Amino acid sequence: MSAAAELWLLMLACGGATYLWRGLGVLLSGRLNPQSAIFEWVSCVAYALVAGLIARIIVAPSGLMAQTALTDRLLACVAAFVAYRLARRNMFVGLISGVLIFVAATHLRSVFL
Amino acid sequence: MTPRHALRAGAREALGVPAAVLGAGFLGYGSLAGDAGYSIWLTLTATLAIWALPGQLVLMEMHAREAAFLATVFAVSLSAARFLPMTLTLMPLMRGGCRVRRLWQFLLAAQLVSMTTWAVAMRRFEEMDVDARWHYFLGFSAVCIGSSMLFAVIGQLLIGALPPLARYGLALLTPLYFFVTLVGEARTRMAIAALVCGTGVALLLHAYAPAWSLFGAGFIGGTVAWLWQGSHVRRR
Image 1: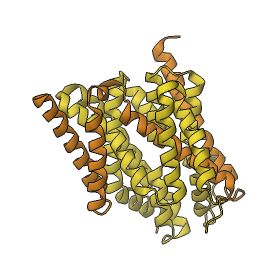
Image 2: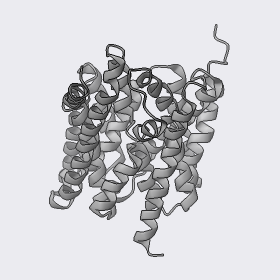
Image 3: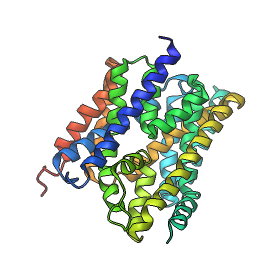
Image 4: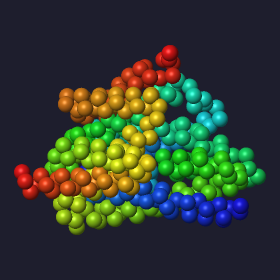
């Protein structure tokens, strides 16, 4: 199988795997208790997985981002979060601040170092 | 409210902040996809077929690192586990009106559920007539999905045309969006514990077994967080 065909197959399989939870939710709705221990555990696993994903993309990225400095990426995260909180949980202000700080830091690094 | 009014109301409310915030996330996704060499059709189909940005990112990340087929599908599926409680809580709110809807209609509507559409619908449904909810949800979701697909294409087309600095900024957009959402919205001690444990395990495993780090972050990190801060833990 070609690499492109395999990626398409993988993507469709991932779509199906994602849908399993959605469909299961519909079928079980009204029968399962959202306050149960299993639910809590599943949501912990989901949270931890997404946190791990973001941590890995920021700390050890692949592709384009691998060419930027770790310090700058971490700086951008801190800046985005602080701006988000200062602006009363405004996502735009947070994102724009983080990206601008990141771009500025990357630029300064290329000029001075 | 007639169905048409509800559909329009949903679409109108999505056209503000929700569509723009999703657009920013998918602008970043499109640029990452372009950087990874995806075709536009693949990006668009992935957005429609998976419709969950974290899962789409897991897929892209693991594929770039040549992880095994089944490990990738499993990790994407794990990252989507949140949809179970989400559809479970949302669907009953759309039942019980004058019109009886069939199971297949609910099964189709489940594909539209996302973090954003779920959060807004749960809040707005309370103050809404049961009969208006279905069409409101359809209108709201349609605009969200449309905006996401549009911005994914824009991101993918832009990434090649921009100077390097702007490309870096665009590529950082999606991880930054998730970072702020996750850290900013984690209100319970259990959620915070899961974030901390997931991050720790992912970084530790990344040094030794990169292909398994997401997997381990979810299972080990999540289980540790649950044992540590789940509601079964007796609080003083």
